Image (cartoon, rainbow, N blue to C red; front, side):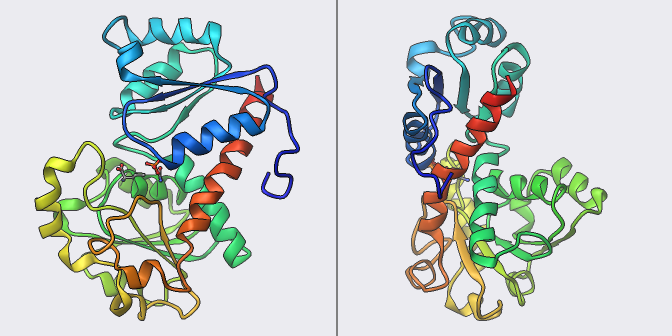
Amino acid sequence: MKKKKGKSLALKGKSVGLIFHKPSLRTRISFEVGVFQLGGDAVYITEKEIELGKRETIPDAARVLSRYLDMIVIRTFSQDEVGQLAESASIPIINGLTDLLHPCQILSDLFTIYEKKKKFENLTIAYVGDGNNVVNSWLELSQRIPMELRIGTAKDTMPDGKILRDAMNSKISKILVTSDPVEAVKNADVIYTDVWASMGQKHLADNKANWLRGFQVNSNLVRHARKDCIIMHCLPANRGEEITDEAMDSPNSVVFDQAENRLHVQKAIMIKLVSKK
Ligand code: CP
Ligand code: NVA
């Protein structure tokens, strides 16, 4: 998709619904532009319009939307809502982020890693910071692709317990959870971080900042990783909190390539799903 920019019209005559219950710069715009570049139409739908699960049940809304649309991208709070939508819809449902998971992000991050490292297996990935949806998706990926995944986080900011146990039990990857950020990043190929307080958790921002104070990605921490390590962040970043300007703007940082690649990888996801129908 990245090489063939603009050369596929796989979504010609198709309509993709974009249901967003949380703010978004990258996901919304890269999906909308991606649909447009593939010859389709995107319909942006906010909570105010459809009141998903309030005006009618989610299964009823799913059945109706399936008769108008060819695919839905949904960003919301509860993973359960996305599950309900997928169960009752007869069209593909793409998770554009929930409190639990952010799969499109991690799929495109894997592509960014492949571009930079020329491989994506058996790398050491150090995630430093809040145990949120992004790290949960890393843990899911670690059950498909062998890697050494080290999570540096505080005891109060651990990732989802079940996803962590599944990742550890699957034995596909080596998983380490540590409260020592230096242990997490030692000789790592990739250092990854994300905001300390995710959307829907802003009321916990002060607590998270206290718990995670020692987990900032800064030059002092980065020097423990490999010299050619790449620094990743899904963005938006709170510069000066989970990552310093120095780390984010360093030659090792690939954060804006990551953002660009959301567009290319999501186009590939949509083409794969539309051709499955
Ligand atoms: N990384 C990401 O999903 O960004 P947005 O919240 O802006 O979509
Ligand atoms: N963990 C962040 C990711 C934003 C793309 C959030 O959920 O707000």
